[in-house]
Length: 498
Image 1 (cartoon, rainbow, N blue to C red):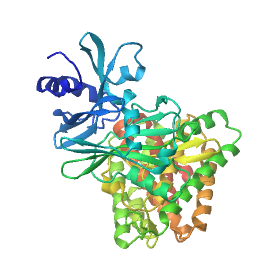
Image 2: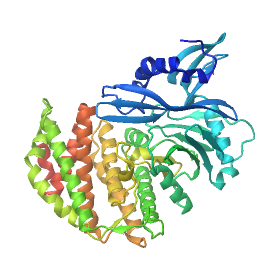
Image 3: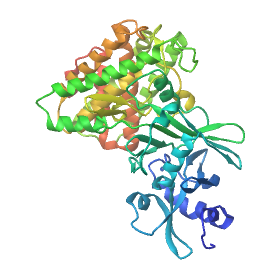
Image 4: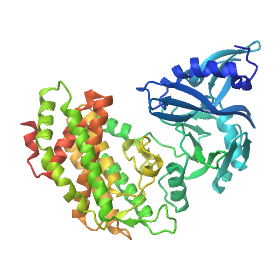
């Protein structure tokens, strides 16, 4: 391989082949954002790679294309060079692809997320609504007016939040949070679309949108690659808050009831904004039809079949968990028969845009308030599914299942905690829904039926996930599914532990 003199050398055929054949296949397997670690990668190519000059220096804007048997995935991987003139940050060492020598200087070739040149350069370009002309297409930096109101008196500090998540986020000067969207998908990004809509309509409990960066392909197709929002100072997410509260405050439940009630209020207010009539076709609510109801029922039945098949194949379980499995499998036909009736109750309810992947980890604890974040939906699903309108009760079911998980993950028995906090959340949510104009539900019986429908589907999904990824956690969704089934079938839940 020829000596490295700069970023453009990595685009030369010999160096590029070395990256694709030797470095990237190992590197991507170590990254949290790479979804297909369990698949045999046939090839990895560096694509759409081009060096651009930003105010703070050069960056190699690039994507990688991973091919498997029967499929392909694309990920965003901006790259840069870090010169080892002094101390090298932990994140640079964590995300570097390889060590290199640039002339007589020691350096490393790294994910540019680790370098300040990327966020500071993109922030400057967003302020100016600057557009880079690429060999094939454009890099378009866009901003809302409120970004111009955020001014730093000196070079802002960069704090990286999640270098190893499905996306990568950092905070600029304690005022702006910038997210690097890793998975490359063409089309309208639901995260950007939702936050823009909520910002424009004054919903106060999600961080407002400031700007974004889009990649425009030569054929006109668009991919969102960066989203910037105002940073909300917080004490972490509600998942960790819940675990800590259960651990330290077993006797005093009132503070948590207030908090989870606030979450219910904020979710209800979010759904209220999304339920209002609008000329924007992407957000205009629609009434659930028989076809929609059939789709809900079919989806739940399919997911339950998958869960039944998954747990039937588990070779060994402890006696208590085995009893839960026996209960679930022995009552599968009655619960499958009940699904169409549960779904039918939803005829006439409103279908709106929803969060789509709502759980405690998507809620920020901010003093005495709660902020809802991450509107991209379930990453494994295609964009059109994540942008589809559905029942807001899916979000309610997601939060209740997450609360159930948190209680179970605390390692002690707190069934009373789950019951009381679920009630506090639902009471607060109902208060908003019942006073909203328009309402998205017709009455409490419709709410109860749809909630059970989506709780069954969600817990069945969790079973499939745990069997594939964390078999030692299978007891949590299995118990959840058994308890929901017992309620739907009007059976005594105490028999589950008999």
